[in-house]
Image 1: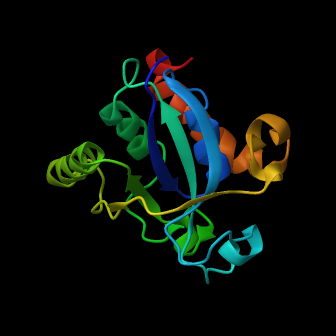
Image 2 (image 1 turned 30 degrees about the vertical axis):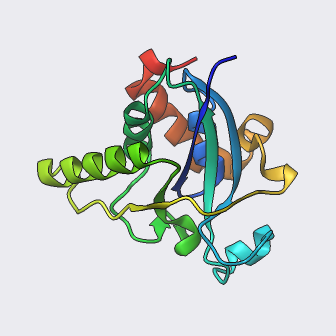
Length: 178
């Protein structure tokens, strides 16, 4: 049986992030949820109110013999805006922050090195503000949030917000798609 690794990522609305990473070669599972806060078993409404400290995240399990942490982080940083603090587009609040919740020292080192390189190279017009913090908790989101884009892709939010991120992913990372 292959040994899978886990990483937890926040990049705005979890519907967008889930839709991108579900299509990435080597990713075995993607679960939308909440991480980084102080309330146990938060509900979506609580997280949306910004009082839980949680971010909307995805927790993914991946096969490191197929895809590396560095490759996952490359997709992560190129499919959202890591320079906006507590915001992605019209989604505003700490629950939409850019965050890497690392599960190992290796993930931490790779994430910090990658972030430093992005800032030094001025890849973006503004500094990368992505939080890189140890993983402490994860609570799966309610069932109706799971696999959202695949089940509700025709809805207006999916067409105007999720679809452009998926399209960007498909254009930039065609060789890494399932």
